[in-house]
Amino acid sequence: MRVVSGIEVTTVSTTAQFPVGSKFSVSSPAGSTQAQEWIYVKASTGLTVVGTLVSRAAGSGTCDACVATPNSDSTLRVIGVVQHAIADGSFGFVQCKGIATVLIETGVSANAGLQVGNTTDGRADALTAAITGMGMGYSLAAISTGDTGQAWINCPGA
Image (cartoon, rainbow, N blue to C red; front, side, top):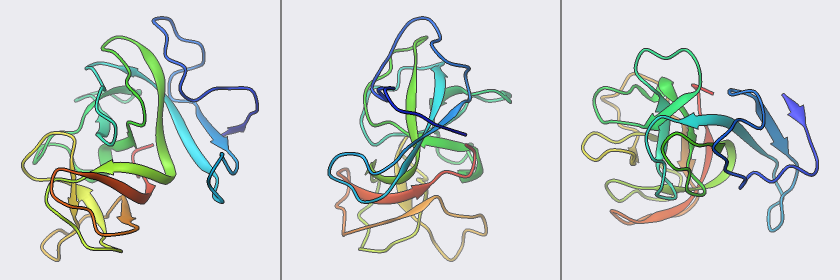
């Protein structure tokens, strides 16, 4: 991982500006006391809704990124969370670690562990006792159904 300055994590382009799959650290971004990690991806589907969970495209060992789908994308395949729009076929950064905005499927309480939701594409849901896989973060406050809120994330597939 490279610690960089002068790179805007909101940069989106139709040609690769960095090696796909590269991870970058941003120490203490404005308004935060914690570092963030971002991974550079090529969107194989439009990543347009802030808070959407992003996974590796099916059969891809690279960082071709798509919206995580319920019941077919394990939380282990999640590589990040959309923090700004990246059009289909474009290159950009998704956040993979730190405090981020996450889109919730079914309302969660504060400090709820998070995993890929089981109904709606790209949404996170509370980690349940019935799930034996690992989570990808936890909510910092209660977040209502269909809303976005702040969570600490550490995406295992990144």
